[in-house]
Image (tube, rainbow over all chains, first blue to last red):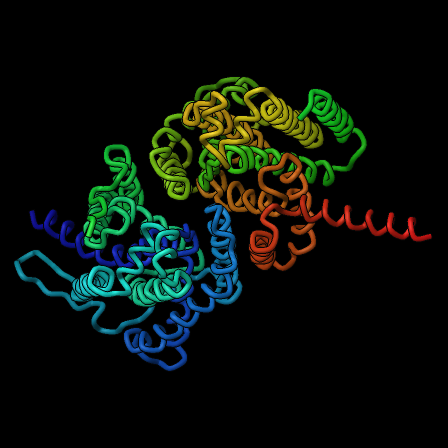
Length: 289
Length: 327
């Protein structure tokens, strides 16, 4: 009984991390309408930047985040202005293939610089810290923290998207770029700000990923697939749905892993395919708001 | 395309194939290997091009079917004792039968989502087959010597057999692609990517057409996987289901050469092989360089090298004519 409870707790907590991966991708898909195949690789790239910062200044990854967020925003801005704004977006295939090119460039660039050895960010004592609310039940403090961060991020994003004037513009662009343009929304500026939001989730996600799991230059693909599955299951544009879907995939992976470690990834994928078969519109379709 | 145009391109193809068929009699071992690789590369690129460039199906999971063919071929020859040549042929229906339901499942998603979901499917296939002990689990397994001997007693014979088989496979892919695109339905198929309504008006059922062609491509990829494993002589999850070899590189070849043209994948494959040979000493750098090249093409001329080459030739010709006129 306690075994099952532990698996469920671990799965739910893992879901927080997955929701953070997916939050940025959901915005890229829904607002910028770019199938950013490089999303996972950008996460890994930023995690390596965090590693370099931590190593050079011997500081905790959480402190490094203070430098990492502006860096990620700046990099994202340069990328949006320098590349995505120059791409012919009439054919969705073109930006997708550009992102694909960047994915391969990032992977092989990281391979040249850092080699294939898996790396990890060291957050110190908190990594081993656990509490036991009931006998036999163990909860990692770090994992709870990650889930709390995910909930806070989603609440902030939800408030921005549904309570602010900028949010109205973002949703207008997301619904129809043409109509938004007609009523005087500055599409370019909206895209740039939305991409900044994406990069904020990437910076936070990269640090938490780096503390929680190992990463190597080719880890991006598996992170992208998880983020993608969460976005599809959660329903595009539904942020609380994203959190719920993250937990669904997290639970699937933990249940799979409890049967056999090698089933962890497979179980997540299978749950995704089954949901796709039964409910292609996702478990939590977009709420009109 | 006019009828004469079709006949002449088929004639050119037949002549090229006949000429290339002499290869093993005239060339050295490394050149034969080199050309065999090129045939496989062009064929896989052409199949991806047919899907993405004409039908609007963007898959990043093509390695699923290559790996499936490899594992299917292994199962037939090693586990069930089927004759290797028959097994090669049987790879085709195996690929088709798996590709069809896969397509129908993924077709519930829009274009862009389809791409990533096809990748998930490939991962699933690799993880499932890669964990089976019959196939040697994660480390893979080797073919029995008797199976390999069926394709030639010595190494040179086997390399020649492999060359001819791959050339024949390329001929089938190129020939059927030319016939398909120039057939009566071909015009409507060409419209599927850009204007689905026009295709429907021309009497094409988009879902059915896409499903049938995706499934046939899956079958062909499975045959290619079986052919390729004859050169590697072993199977493994990471090697047989290689995302890099069968999807990433292939997309680069098509994008750099020219998406949605028959000559694009050929030009792209040749450019790719030349590139690889020049930069292979630099390891991962050459892959990064391929990525940069593909990004450059997409940003500045999404129609690819084919268009860039044609334009260069045209401007050179114009300049020469201009000079001749001036003199």
